[in-house]
Length: 87
Image (cartoon, rainbow, N blue to C red; front, side, top):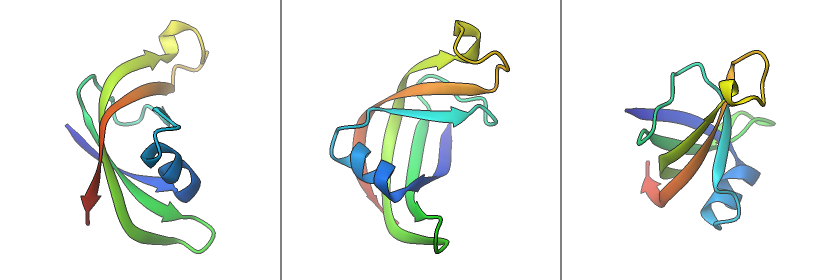
């Protein structure tokens, strides 16, 4: 499944540079292994998209049930196959 998501500029750049290899998200979309995240660079301070986007495959999911979130609402997803996308 493809998920289009906002991605704050500093996080977007860290992913693109290979420094950030994960996403921590509210699991409101029932993320699954091998899903594709379309991360659109976004700046919340002035509420605009830059037009840059990254595609990344979910290669591992750490779920709340694994003990890090007692509310069972969040996931940490490992990212692989990151590539730039034209939007």
